Length: 237
Ligand SMILES: Nc1ncnc2c1ncn2[C@@H]1O[C@H](COP(=O)(O)OP(=O)(O)OP(=O)(O)O)[C@@H](O)[C@H]1O
Image (tube, rainbow, N blue to C red; front, side, top):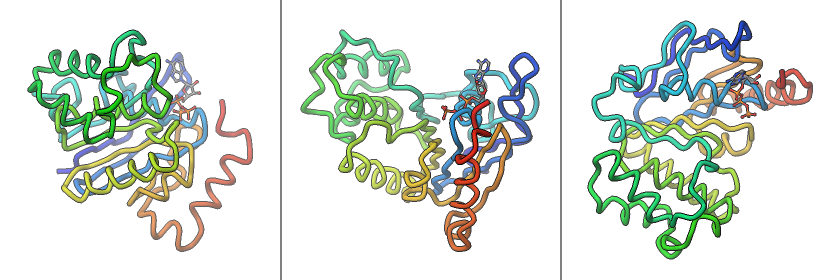
């Protein structure tokens, strides 16, 4: 069973199709990059997958089920959506403690994930003092709390310095090599090509091209397609 399966997905807002006819599969052990310019429909796709928006047509399944039907969502899928939603007066550790409690996870996971994302030294500082990259790391820590087999990440490299980007790549690679599945949305071509096994390119809500990264890169079609998409204003609607 694919870890993530999206079929014929359409999401409309007041008659406007934010995404339409989107098909996408993430098998265990794979990192799939969801690429597209601003407004292409990446976040909308992830929101439907995570049960934050209802599909207008089609479906988006995690481990064969809609997110809302998962028995134990926190242990099934970890998500990083927007590092903005953090309480500025709370420490990073407290933020993770609250999530742990809410999801019924073992308290010891907080120290584990802080260590994994390299945030142990900053764990007791208030979030308002964190850089953007540190907030991203904290968001990734939160995604890893339930030790899920599936990660859904929206622009995870946002704000990371070069060392942080390398760390993220290595972390995602080893997560996938251990049988995990990753869906990573980004508008930065280089970011995706450095880590993804497969790529799905969205433009104006539709899949423009999709396939294994090495094939798309070998015949240079990925860069061509992406430059065409981003050179025009077609991506922003
Ligand atoms: N709640 C909403 N109501 C109305 N329109 C929406 C809503 N959410 C998204 N849209 C529209 O759907 C389109 C796709 O937006 P989406 O955020 O999914 O794109 P994106 O690929 O994630 O872009 P970015 O890279 O800028 O984050 C945009 O035109 C956006 O304005």
